[in-house]
Length: 392
Image 1 (cartoon, rainbow, N blue to C red):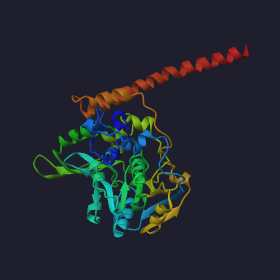
Image 2 (image 1 turned 90 degrees about the horizontal axis):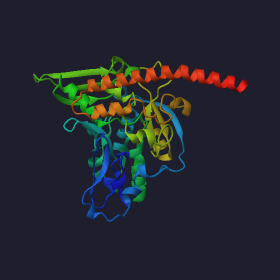
Image 3 (image 1 turned 45 degrees about the vertical axis):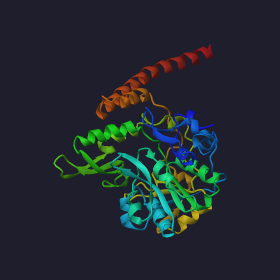
Image 4 (image 1 turned 180 degrees about the vertical axis):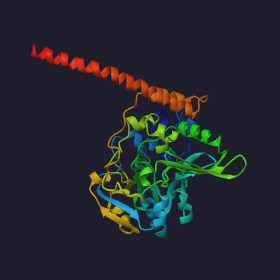
């Protein structure tokens, strides 16, 4: 038994970390999502360890009997709060645990590989590279393989990555050495989207050195904004700022839900308060904090370990109901949209640009609206007919 038959999975990479023969690789499939491949299949002993740690192959969560508490929170350090996507809680947790001799396995953007990658931070300077949300699927393998189970770590990641990671540390009986942190996840878009987006950016800025997917330049409530730094063809430094409110093409496609992984539509079991982490964070959108422009973090703890960690932070922590903390978060998986097949086909076509993909989305959305307009009066007439039929 092994992961060779698992396709369109979460791509968390924990199977590659767990394999004692080191014959599992994680690479992008044809649709632009990470999934496992087994190299040298003759060396596989079918021990089943890769499947045992795979959250995709289990229906239940790895964390049993969570003790849920929820908070609104923000860093008391104004500089940290300003730089971070919401209230700066993730960075404050990392900073605290570094002081307690933990190492931090977190995510940064690698401009050479043009992707988000997990890495190990051992200092505040190294941790700083992780600031900000990354709205693309992270490559975990190199970072995860650096982990020594006998040492202490904070592990951050998507809910599916964290669920698999807890299965891994449960299997090796070393949960006490780890604190796990996930976040409210919208889903991950195809890496083909990010590739096309950066190809378009490179027409203006050939060398990209830094990307921030969330920027509060126009305030927290208009922070669906990408800030990219790099060099022009003239070798001059340059910065590009593009926000969703101004029609940014990456966010236009990502938030239309037309290019997420199949697992995000069909197999995600981590919405709202479903988590295998010790702590979950995100933006506390909603009416109560609608006037705040500095950023408020939504925080949920699921274990005493997570709660104890929060109590030691240099942060303001306000107890809030689950309803307030999760008001602006997705409560269920998105349905596969009408435009999905055509948008994915456009993204997979190397001859098409991101502008062409946006045109595809617009065309398919218009078709869907027209179909709904036709169906609505027909449905109304059918309902009237059925009511009259019942009376007769």
